[in-house]
Image 1 (cartoon, rainbow, N blue to C red):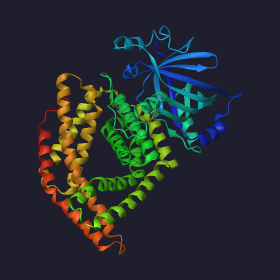
Image 2 (cartoon, one colour; image 1 turned 60 degrees about the vertical axis):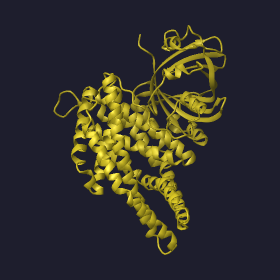
Image 3 (cartoon, rainbow, N blue to C red; image 1 turned 90 degrees about the vertical axis):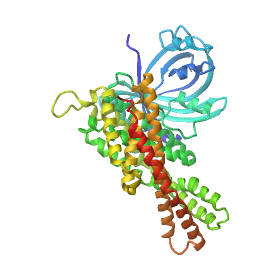
Image 4 (cartoon, rainbow, N blue to C red; image 1 turned 135 degrees about the vertical axis):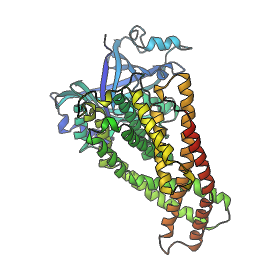
Length: 517
């Protein structure tokens, strides 16, 4: 028997926007929309064995009915395509007989204590209507409510477009049409994921990229979809964090997510080359996010470079004024980032990227000369070929690294990022003990090279920050300019030592045996 699946596009918005959607012309349906109050309790073991195994288990109260649902976790963002098992039960706690044909019993069987306990609840006012869009029948759900845990509660306001009949392309088509007049954001978290993050305190904290899980028989196309989805998920989690509190690490992780996504578009170019949207989206992402670099440079200077200088020269009066001036400049730079993230163009771009990943021409177009599309090749073969090419470029471009000019070093750094991201993207394809050991050593070596080249890059950007101050005009006191000059000089003094370390790290990297061979 085929596993039942749920195909759902999740979007986030404000309360006023939800009210506007309720009367949107595209969401008019025959009859009166169905309105209900839903109270759902999520269960797991005390150790979270179901969560660790990629499952959620809930019991939902809907009037006099009790619906038990098991869902597989999804690494997707926006479009959730996941296994789902649902059954009506009698009672407020999970019914073991009703989940007997799901993966739950196996996970509970391996648990130290298989007892199920309630972990959090969601209470939602839900309105549902069926609409036709394109050639598809779509269930549109407007949810407003909250998630409640022992650690507190968080509001919930989202739109779910679930495919009853038809194609995912129509889900995105409807979302994009609605987003033309309503500020909708691609959903990053399921209700259960939001509840867990509230419990463990990570809902409003920045997060690094999660590992990409690829099946052993994954194709190159399947690998790209998984990688691109992971990048979008990483981006959206940290976008919400930065919008909520302007945390510098949140901005840093936004930029990391965007670099990873752009690197993926480059690494997987052989399977995307026939789809012009790939290059267009890559260029558009770079263009729209240009202001993010200035803000990040100021963050690094104020959090790393300047504190080190203050510790070294605590009596230098001009350093305090330097910090005050640059903090004001950083506030303006953060304002520019916020303006971008809150703009319709940004929200639309992210929705377009998500739609293209799932429904773009790259997924169906065949090669111009016929034969098997590159996207259908085994991911492991594809990875080996791509990683070989980048490794050769780094080996060639990094020769005599300590003698290279800053621009040439920057090109080595970019290739190093691609190699590191590629090694991370494809890591799960190499699971045997020897390959895993080699992978760990390889990523460590790439990271060492990146760290040294990154430090050199931070020095270069520090000079740019300080140069902008020097050209600001006569309003900058002489003692502040003097302090800026001292900082630049102290920074420059470390360059030679960092270059030597970077050259050693490059030599160590090229000597390592590739983990993919």
